[in-house]
Image 1: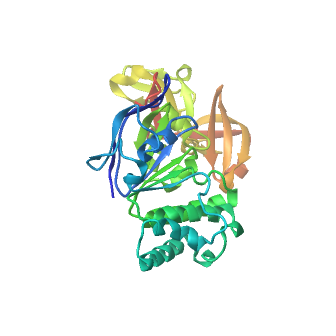
Image 2: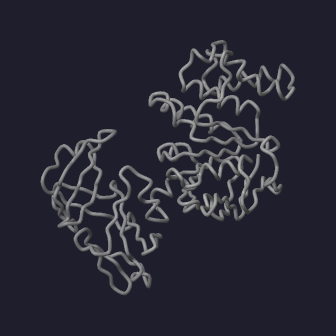
Image 3: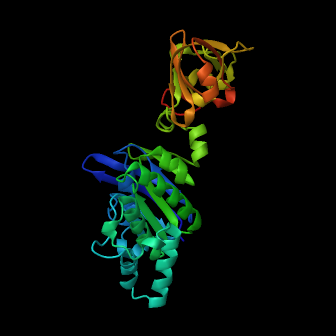
Length: 355
């Protein structure tokens, strides 16, 4: 398998840098998800790794081999696209066989690979069915199987779940999670869907405006966002932000008097703090007044996925969202009392970078 090294990689379209001077390493045998909104450059970056786009400048290395100008065919990779790439009018088995037949492999090797991949993807019972008989989710599994069966060093996935219905999407996501755990290939997965990224990734490379703004394991990038953009983009809802009009600072500490009772020690950088961020689930809510708690008025509560309640809270003009359990949410009305642990607070400077 390969480590993939990107060095000062840029792709320009006229005056627009779709990918802007990225230097980044994708570890071998890992699942790296390129995550970001539409137009952030993630698909362009993947296409350069695949050899489908030529960089304007910079280099791509597979281990120590410079493949910047090597053709896609010679890069030893497989690809899965948004729409299933399959041969219609043929069986599932034939679809899995064809890429292997073109490589001139021994018939027994082909037989074993096809059946192993079918078992891995849970489509063994469909091997003799024609692809027209299958739903889009199963067709996309065939496309995944075709990429896996060739045993490439790298497999690239370009939003493979986007264009299938919700039931098939959930099933395919579960299947991919299991498959990725059993493969040894280096996997790059492109998506704008944070749930896919959090479910599938070993590491998330979060992209904005052609650059990677943060790369970290899913839990770390969620709990410790490196920027306001990361805090906002990950989470449903995104991170609460308290701007500087609600903050007070000393030479070494910051607080938000209407929200928290404690001061947050940040040393000499206190004067740089512009925004305080906190996740909805980090707002500890009680219907009883407790020591150090701050009162808030409940403007709205709504029942969310999983039975939890999402609260819209008003702290004398400072609006925040909080997430609470189903049991507690049913009891809440009118006024609540809240606390927030200092460890659950992220501070940002005027540029939006975490302090």
